Image (cartoon, rainbow, N blue to C red):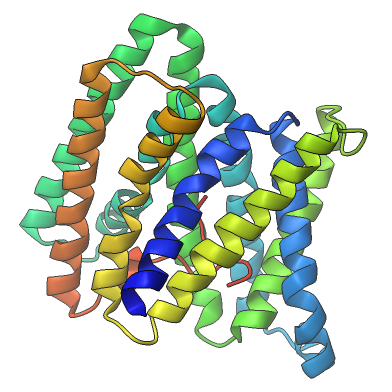
Length: 304
């Protein structure tokens, strides 16, 4: 059963990028509806069970939720936009650098990092250079998409750190409901500022929005949240990295993406580098929690 759930989870998160890339709706609108729907699904039962939980926040909890919400809104804005500009495979791999960014943030925060983690970061960053180099040869638009995906990964790392601070004293339901609710409000403001429509989409676009919410959130990240209760967080972290080749394969099969051989080499370098980062961090701390997303929407991914 565990293996089956792991396969379902990998397919769920891997399908996120291809679905959003194929959805004929503005990036900010997709991000808004994904978070708004997530907030409703998580918030309704939480409100019924503990209506006062939303109004008893400490100053520290309010601060970390605010930081997490802003980071998550900008993460989705960057990542979904990148999917419209560069390949799904490249965007997914670059945004998955979240684990590497967390390790780098730990360095800046004065937290000791094992040498093997730094070596893994080096390999992953070299993969970034390889991918962006090939995309620059293709078009400036693809390079812009790569840079947005890298920024999306850094923002996801910030979201994870802030979320872990908030989650230290908050329930999953309260945290995710507030975080995704605030995130959707911020995205609504961005949609208004950039004059991106929120409705009047074709039925196929609405189907894509609903699909990414159900597939990526319910069948993806919520499954991984369940697996955290029955298997090692380190193992879950490694399984999540399969999103990189999974998204590349799904994009090739269903979207017909064909990439230069060098781009696949860059994807492989990022995958191997992040695997070293995760295992190195896990061995040092005895667990991999610092590299995992805060409990996601419909359970938190980030990701993606």
